[in-house]
Image (spheres, rainbow over the protein chains, first blue to last red):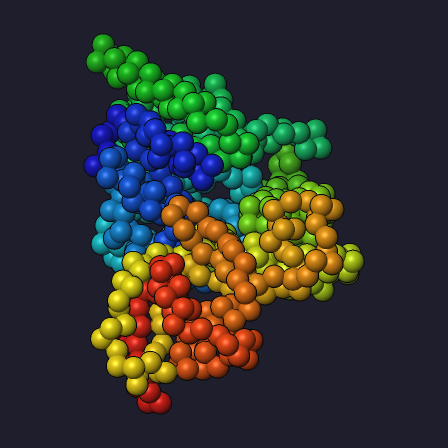
Length: 281
Length: 259
């Protein structure tokens, strides 16, 4: 189990040796299972060693839960094998799709929020939870577009998915901020529409602000420190939902490990302060 | 309204780099047109796959320089979109692609260096198995030796090239005499890293044949072609001593007995 007020970090290959040599005092480590599906090797052995000391979270990017190709049975079996081997405290995936006609598009592509998509998602989440014999968390995506024919707001879609399947939600605060700015919705209103009981984890990460043809667009590149408005939204989430295991992700332009640990320490401080505020109120 | 399947096919075509006009009408475009929004996904697809190839092929990237690598990767990704979500499994055919990529025609060794890097990558993710003890074959009657079939370390790989690809891989090609001849390499995990070493021809052909699942008798026949005085007993001691054998079975034409 991961303590609800714990903060973890995303474990990336370049940091692996440093983390094995001197395991940092973090609440948990999160990895993408797709990087460990070769069946063995030094990285998987290191992970098996690390999991004896602290909880591991498997955060998948390859199941294509919203894909109309259906769940790739081979991939699901490989994930099930890792779940059995590593006994992670959390298993999560995304509200997105990434495979069509057998092509893996290597991105978390946006879904239209329709009854058709909800039925498909619910069936796939059921299939995955049945095979893994456990609950998974589903993460809200960062989006750069939305579809005209969507009929359901994203948080309501997630709430319906959780209600129908019993899955939990991974609430990515940076993604809410990024999508909110790109698509024009309010982050706090989004939080208010999420079902509190279903939230099992928070994610924090950096994004970049880009100018495209004079228009500002935020890109969820996980390549910098968590931005001030995201910290503010995280604190709002802590006040609304109380703490959950919180993960700091950093993928591109990966800094030295202490920088990432510094971000995790900031999340710890926010939890302490906001929990105090809640008690005072 | 686009059905989900049609929408995903259209989006797929767009991400893969084909113009996709049917999708534009389905996308909310206020403030920022659908085209540039779709371009973000297309851009991410290409950049992230280029980075994945760079991670597997760092020596190729160094040899051809980063800009040219980006161009080659762009062309490769266009011709060979990934089929699986594990990116360490993406790029197996990059060596074959480079071999027939016209701008690389003068770099004849490049494809073999890429094959070496792919082999290193594959070894890095292979499971490990405990090696058999040195006396493991004592239970096998001498008369059964010809039909021994070995199971070897899963991370093992063998690669032969007319170029000194190990030296090219290790340093800048200008420092390597391309005329010095080729090499036969054995690649494997050792401890927490992947290592490779040169083998002489008889050892190489024996081990490569055994890894391919050949009976010992047939593998030895290949080694004897390379060296009529090939010392089998010594070769087997080395194979076991280096921890490469993890199991064996006795083959027959219609069945195998595993040990």
